[in-house]
Length: 368
Image 1: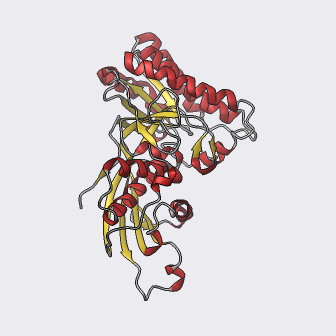
Image 2: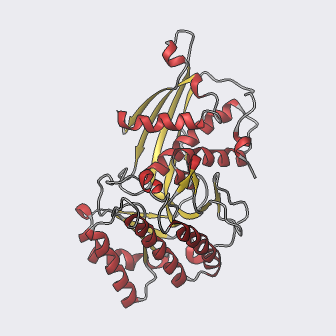
Image 3: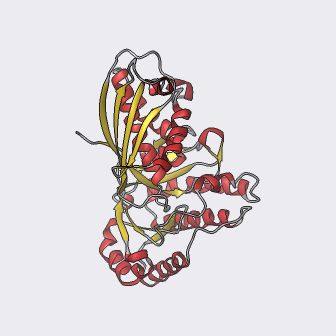
């Protein structure tokens, strides 16, 4: 088990002047929700997520070593250009700057290079599909690829756990987007290897029912959220129901261990939908209070309940910190669920748009 100190490297054994890498990293959808954090992006409660496959960030990192002629202002600081979908994106830069400041102790080469970060999403950012998770995970993978060139002896285990550790310092849930289909983040007594510092692949049996699970994301509102997740997490400090909520998360994660083993879809649905509604209940009972669901979010939830009750098809919903609805279901009912979505749910989506996704494996190096 690695500690934070283990991620501070010894002096590097190799050098490199310039080059580039390109990684994709997926979003993820939490089943047990992380909401509330301590200092240094430590979660107030454990969480577990399905890694997605199609909703991802693709980030290319170009790097060139600073020379003696580099202006002094750039020599002593971080130097980077940021492009989003090929165009300069100044309003993203402060978040990257903050990330670099947080991780510099673990990546001491950062001020030695000028970086060009060129990033794009396959889905709308800042609308509750965890774009910060996929974005920070993709960036962390690129930086780790550079560090691996500087330290060729690095093991794969160290590479991926440090990538998850770094991603967490950019966006908490990003640590769940690095590696694995089902990922646990946060100390949980009966999950071996679980840690507050990084995400780990769920280490126990997962029933066939959950293999290739489907997630169709209904885009209720593609606009930016009126309250960011960072602000929402902070409102869990002094929240009247915080301690009970944190205990509930541990209990629900315990339940999922046996549910994943048995394949009990009815119990899975109870935990997942309860977690989604609890997340939004925390928002509605914080001070100041806020609501991220939209009227059409509730219309979709009620329609899913009605459809499930009438057909006994094991389809359920979950929500992230936004209005969009993730419709979760086993692969063997895909045709019926997609027909239901077409017939009854797309009317509640912005411009009738939705994204078909499923469980994926994590970040992927793209060969140039």
